[in-house]
Length: 329
Image (cartoon, rainbow, N blue to C red; front, side, top):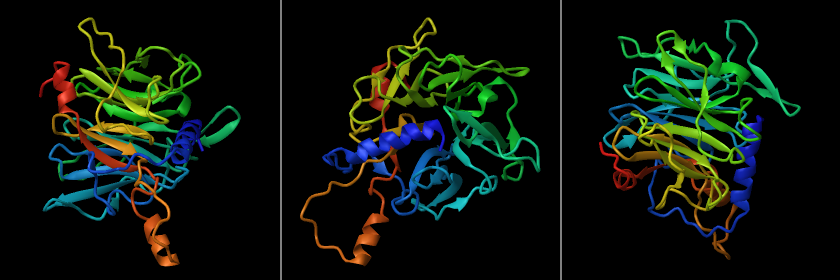
């Protein structure tokens, strides 16, 4: 398990140990209950521009077995997910689509050369699956190309997570790099004619705060990410920062409304509609006791359902928040 996953595991444990007072009611929309969102871990939603194809990550609770799946929507219902054409053999995770839908980026421990060993790295005496950034390109027949490794300094250290792509090709991601301090921080690698420039840390304030999972507005007017900036309701919440006229970022604001809960929220991504926000959350149904007496069958069925404390995908509308800060479609 990577150090990043140790952080997430600790957050999840804290969330599950907390009083279960926050019920996942009709606040937001659970995405594809029982089909997309299940009793396993689902994170990192990536929707095509037409909103009818969804890529996401499914994994075990320890996130040691990550795979990217794809589901298609027809007649308002999500179809049974299938393993994406480029995934299924390696530790593949955190898919994100370019705003035009022509490239899908993700991170993986796959070898840099065919037949080579899988990527590994080490931090704090722990050895774990490393991650580099890869992409697949949409072909003329609609299929994806073979995976292409993204060369450049952004892959230094083999610890890059949660890419998010702006319309001009700039890539935001979270990582632990020499200037990160003790925690993870968010970086941007600017797209140039020669490839990607050396990543720069996004200045969001005190480096003591762990910041992960950026979701960048295609026009780079705002940035949403997961952290605890000191006012989190649970172990990690979602925050938003706005680009200022001088190019700097505003002080991060805790996203209002029902996006955050006393559970763990992370891995935000923006949908194709204005204000559409997808979130990974471990919020669960309220437990009250005594409960209806379970038998082995009902217990198994209930524990395998969404809202059992595993992370699921949720959809929210934050268009009012954006408009209040001068952001329009």
